[in-house]
Length: 252
Image (cartoon, rainbow, N blue to C red; front, side):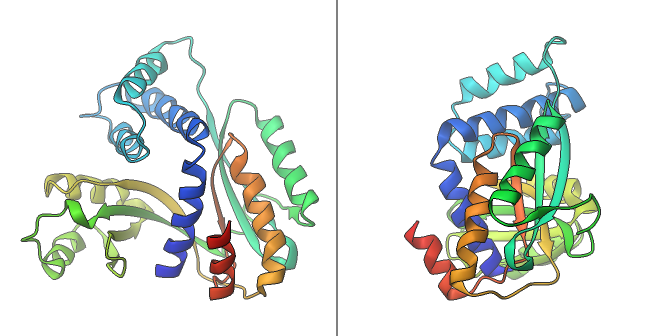
Protein backbone atom coordinates (compact mmCIF):
# COMPACT_ATOMS: atom_id res chain seq x y z
CA UNK A 1 0.00 0.00 0.00
CA UNK A 2 3.08 2.23 0.06
CA UNK A 3 2.64 3.88 -3.36
CA UNK A 4 -1.04 4.48 -2.74
CA UNK A 5 -0.13 6.14 0.56
CA UNK A 6 2.38 8.41 -1.20
CA UNK A 7 -0.30 9.42 -3.71
CA UNK A 8 -2.87 10.18 -1.01
CA UNK A 9 -0.24 12.05 1.01
CA UNK A 10 0.62 14.22 -2.00
CA UNK A 11 -3.05 14.94 -2.70
CA UNK A 12 -3.71 15.72 0.95
CA UNK A 13 -0.78 18.13 1.14
CA UNK A 14 -2.15 19.88 -1.92
CA UNK A 15 -5.58 20.16 -0.32
CA UNK A 16 -4.20 21.24 3.03
CA UNK A 17 -2.37 24.10 1.31
CA UNK A 18 -5.86 25.58 0.90
CA UNK A 19 -6.20 26.01 4.64
CA UNK A 20 -9.62 27.69 4.71
CA UNK A 21 -11.24 24.75 2.92
CA UNK A 22 -9.46 22.30 5.17
CA UNK A 23 -10.81 24.04 8.27
CA UNK A 24 -14.31 24.03 6.76
CA UNK A 25 -14.12 20.27 6.27
CA UNK A 26 -12.85 19.72 9.80
CA UNK A 27 -15.67 21.93 11.09
CA UNK A 28 -18.18 19.63 9.42
CA UNK A 29 -16.49 16.61 10.97
CA UNK A 30 -16.77 18.25 14.39
CA UNK A 31 -20.49 18.88 13.92
CA UNK A 32 -21.10 15.26 12.88
CA UNK A 33 -19.02 13.92 15.79
CA UNK A 34 -20.69 16.15 18.41
CA UNK A 35 -24.22 15.44 17.16
CA UNK A 36 -23.38 11.73 17.25
CA UNK A 37 -21.60 11.44 20.61
CA UNK A 38 -21.54 14.70 22.56
CA UNK A 39 -18.91 17.32 23.34
CA UNK A 40 -16.62 15.36 25.67
CA UNK A 41 -13.66 13.88 23.73
CA UNK A 42 -12.94 11.51 26.63
CA UNK A 43 -16.20 9.68 25.92
CA UNK A 44 -16.51 10.48 22.21
CA UNK A 45 -13.88 8.56 20.22
CA UNK A 46 -14.93 10.12 16.93
CA UNK A 47 -14.50 13.63 18.34
CA UNK A 48 -11.02 12.68 19.62
CA UNK A 49 -10.17 11.51 16.13
CA UNK A 50 -11.31 14.79 14.55
CA UNK A 51 -9.40 16.83 17.13
CA UNK A 52 -6.24 14.87 16.35
CA UNK A 53 -6.69 15.54 12.64
CA UNK A 54 -7.34 19.23 13.34
CA UNK A 55 -4.06 19.42 15.23
CA UNK A 56 -2.21 17.84 12.29
CA UNK A 57 -3.77 20.42 9.97
CA UNK A 58 -2.57 23.22 12.29
CA UNK A 59 -6.10 24.35 13.04
CA UNK A 60 -5.90 26.70 16.07
CA UNK A 61 -7.15 25.13 19.29
CA UNK A 62 -9.49 28.08 19.92
CA UNK A 63 -11.13 27.45 16.54
CA UNK A 64 -11.66 23.80 17.44
CA UNK A 65 -13.20 24.62 20.82
CA UNK A 66 -15.51 27.22 19.26
CA UNK A 67 -16.58 24.70 16.62
CA UNK A 68 -17.38 22.12 19.32
CA UNK A 69 -19.43 24.64 21.28
CA UNK A 70 -21.32 25.74 18.18
CA UNK A 71 -21.96 22.13 17.16
CA UNK A 72 -23.61 21.45 20.53
CA UNK A 73 -26.23 24.14 19.86
CA UNK A 74 -29.51 22.48 19.00
CA UNK A 75 -30.06 25.06 16.25
CA UNK A 76 -26.87 24.01 14.44
CA UNK A 77 -27.84 21.82 11.52
CA UNK A 78 -26.17 18.43 11.14
CA UNK A 79 -24.51 17.15 7.97
CA UNK A 80 -25.44 13.93 6.23
CA UNK A 81 -22.66 11.62 5.17
CA UNK A 82 -23.14 10.13 1.73
CA UNK A 83 -21.08 8.29 -0.88
CA UNK A 84 -21.20 8.61 -4.65
CA UNK A 85 -19.64 6.22 -7.16
CA UNK A 86 -18.72 6.48 -10.79
CA UNK A 87 -16.18 5.89 -13.53
CA UNK A 88 -13.66 8.42 -14.76
CA UNK A 89 -12.43 8.31 -18.34
CA UNK A 90 -10.54 5.12 -19.32
CA UNK A 91 -12.61 3.05 -16.88
CA UNK A 92 -11.02 4.26 -13.65
CA UNK A 93 -13.35 3.60 -10.70
CA UNK A 94 -13.87 6.63 -8.43
CA UNK A 95 -15.50 6.59 -4.97
CA UNK A 96 -16.49 9.95 -3.46
CA UNK A 97 -17.28 10.35 0.27
CA UNK A 98 -19.22 13.52 1.12
CA UNK A 99 -20.73 15.39 4.06
CA UNK A 100 -23.51 17.74 3.05
CA UNK A 101 -26.57 19.67 4.18
CA UNK A 102 -28.03 19.57 0.67
CA UNK A 103 -27.98 16.20 -1.07
CA UNK A 104 -29.40 17.48 -4.34
CA UNK A 105 -26.72 20.16 -4.65
CA UNK A 106 -23.91 17.72 -3.91
CA UNK A 107 -25.12 15.07 -6.34
CA UNK A 108 -25.60 17.68 -9.08
CA UNK A 109 -22.10 19.09 -8.53
CA UNK A 110 -20.41 15.69 -8.53
CA UNK A 111 -22.36 14.57 -11.60
CA UNK A 112 -21.27 17.72 -13.46
CA UNK A 113 -17.59 17.07 -12.67
CA UNK A 114 -17.80 13.52 -14.02
CA UNK A 115 -19.53 14.74 -17.17
CA UNK A 116 -17.03 17.56 -17.70
CA UNK A 117 -14.16 15.05 -17.58
CA UNK A 118 -15.83 12.44 -19.83
CA UNK A 119 -16.77 10.17 -16.94
CA UNK A 120 -20.13 9.04 -15.60
CA UNK A 121 -21.74 8.90 -12.17
CA UNK A 122 -23.05 5.43 -11.35
CA UNK A 123 -25.50 3.92 -8.88
CA UNK A 124 -24.65 3.39 -5.23
CA UNK A 125 -23.18 -0.05 -4.58
CA UNK A 126 -21.87 -0.48 -8.11
CA UNK A 127 -18.21 -0.19 -7.02
CA UNK A 128 -18.35 -1.91 -3.64
CA UNK A 129 -16.62 -4.99 -5.07
CA UNK A 130 -13.61 -2.92 -6.16
CA UNK A 131 -12.84 -1.27 -2.80
CA UNK A 132 -12.32 -2.52 0.76
CA UNK A 133 -12.95 0.00 3.53
CA UNK A 134 -10.05 0.15 5.99
CA UNK A 135 -9.03 2.13 9.04
CA UNK A 136 -5.75 4.00 8.41
CA UNK A 137 -3.64 5.60 11.14
CA UNK A 138 -0.57 7.71 10.44
CA UNK A 139 2.08 8.06 13.14
CA UNK A 140 4.94 10.56 12.94
CA UNK A 141 8.05 8.45 13.50
CA UNK A 142 9.78 11.37 15.20
CA UNK A 143 7.13 11.31 17.95
CA UNK A 144 7.77 7.67 18.83
CA UNK A 145 9.77 6.76 21.90
CA UNK A 146 13.29 5.91 20.70
CA UNK A 147 13.12 2.69 22.73
CA UNK A 148 10.11 1.37 20.80
CA UNK A 149 10.94 -1.65 18.66
CA UNK A 150 8.80 -1.78 15.51
CA UNK A 151 8.48 -5.57 15.66
CA UNK A 152 7.29 -5.39 19.28
CA UNK A 153 4.86 -2.62 18.37
CA UNK A 154 3.48 -4.75 15.56
CA UNK A 155 2.85 -7.62 17.98
CA UNK A 156 1.08 -5.24 20.39
CA UNK A 157 -1.19 -3.95 17.65
CA UNK A 158 -2.19 -7.35 16.28
CA UNK A 159 -4.54 -7.77 19.25
CA UNK A 160 -6.28 -4.55 18.21
CA UNK A 161 -6.83 -5.78 14.65
CA UNK A 162 -3.62 -4.77 12.85
CA UNK A 163 -3.60 -5.91 9.21
CA UNK A 164 -0.49 -4.16 7.98
CA UNK A 165 2.16 -1.81 9.35
CA UNK A 166 3.95 0.17 6.63
CA UNK A 167 7.27 1.57 7.83
CA UNK A 168 8.83 2.26 4.41
CA UNK A 169 8.52 6.01 4.89
CA UNK A 170 11.24 7.20 7.28
CA UNK A 171 8.98 9.99 8.56
CA UNK A 172 5.80 8.02 9.15
CA UNK A 173 4.35 4.70 10.19
CA UNK A 174 1.06 3.80 8.53
CA UNK A 175 -1.21 1.31 10.26
CA UNK A 176 -4.07 -0.48 8.47
CA UNK A 177 -6.96 -2.33 10.08
CA UNK A 178 -10.47 -3.51 9.22
CA UNK A 179 -13.30 -1.00 9.44
CA UNK A 180 -14.76 -2.96 12.37
CA UNK A 181 -11.47 -2.59 14.30
CA UNK A 182 -11.09 1.17 13.81
CA UNK A 183 -12.05 2.23 17.32
CA UNK A 184 -10.18 -0.72 18.87
CA UNK A 185 -7.01 0.43 17.12
CA UNK A 186 -7.56 4.05 18.12
CA UNK A 187 -7.98 3.02 21.76
CA UNK A 188 -4.92 0.73 21.64
CA UNK A 189 -2.67 3.47 20.28
CA UNK A 190 -3.96 5.88 22.94
CA UNK A 191 -3.32 3.28 25.66
CA UNK A 192 0.26 2.92 24.38
CA UNK A 193 0.60 6.71 24.59
CA UNK A 194 1.37 6.92 20.86
CA UNK A 195 0.37 10.23 19.31
CA UNK A 196 -1.80 9.74 16.22
CA UNK A 197 -0.95 12.27 13.53
CA UNK A 198 -3.97 11.43 11.39
CA UNK A 199 -6.67 8.77 11.34
CA UNK A 200 -9.38 8.12 8.82
CA UNK A 201 -11.40 5.52 6.96
CA UNK A 202 -10.14 4.88 3.45
CA UNK A 203 -11.41 2.81 0.56
CA UNK A 204 -8.51 0.67 -0.63
CA UNK A 205 -8.87 -0.77 -4.14
CA UNK A 206 -8.38 -4.51 -4.53
CA UNK A 207 -8.26 -4.22 -8.32
CA UNK A 208 -6.03 -1.65 -10.01
CA UNK A 209 -6.17 -0.41 -13.59
CA UNK A 210 -3.05 0.72 -15.44
CA UNK A 211 -3.24 3.67 -17.83
CA UNK A 212 -0.64 5.96 -19.39
CA UNK A 213 0.46 9.26 -17.86
CA UNK A 214 -1.20 11.08 -20.75
CA UNK A 215 -4.50 9.30 -20.09
CA UNK A 216 -4.14 10.03 -16.37
CA UNK A 217 -4.18 13.79 -16.97
CA UNK A 218 -7.96 13.88 -17.37
CA UNK A 219 -8.47 11.54 -14.41
CA UNK A 220 -6.35 13.86 -12.25
CA UNK A 221 -8.41 16.83 -13.46
CA UNK A 222 -11.57 15.07 -12.22
CA UNK A 223 -9.93 14.34 -8.86
CA UNK A 224 -8.97 18.01 -8.53
CA UNK A 225 -12.51 19.19 -9.28
CA UNK A 226 -13.96 16.78 -6.74
CA UNK A 227 -11.47 17.63 -4.01
CA UNK A 228 -12.04 21.36 -4.42
CA UNK A 229 -15.74 20.95 -3.57
CA UNK A 230 -16.39 21.67 0.11
CA UNK A 231 -19.03 18.91 0.33
CA UNK A 232 -16.45 16.31 -0.73
CA UNK A 233 -14.39 14.85 2.09
CA UNK A 234 -12.40 12.10 0.41
CA UNK A 235 -11.91 10.73 -3.09
CA UNK A 236 -10.62 7.23 -3.88
CA UNK A 237 -9.78 5.56 -7.18
CA UNK A 238 -8.22 2.39 -8.57
CA UNK A 239 -5.73 3.97 -10.98
CA UNK A 240 -2.36 2.21 -10.79
CA UNK A 241 0.23 4.71 -9.65
CA UNK A 242 3.13 4.46 -12.06
CA UNK A 243 6.30 6.53 -11.72
CA UNK A 244 5.15 8.71 -14.63
CA UNK A 245 1.87 9.54 -12.88
CA UNK A 246 3.62 10.28 -9.59
CA UNK A 247 5.96 12.60 -11.51
CA UNK A 248 2.93 14.52 -12.78
CA UNK A 249 1.83 15.03 -9.18
CA UNK A 250 5.24 16.31 -8.17
CA UNK A 251 5.09 18.95 -10.90
CA UNK A 252 1.71 20.27 -9.75
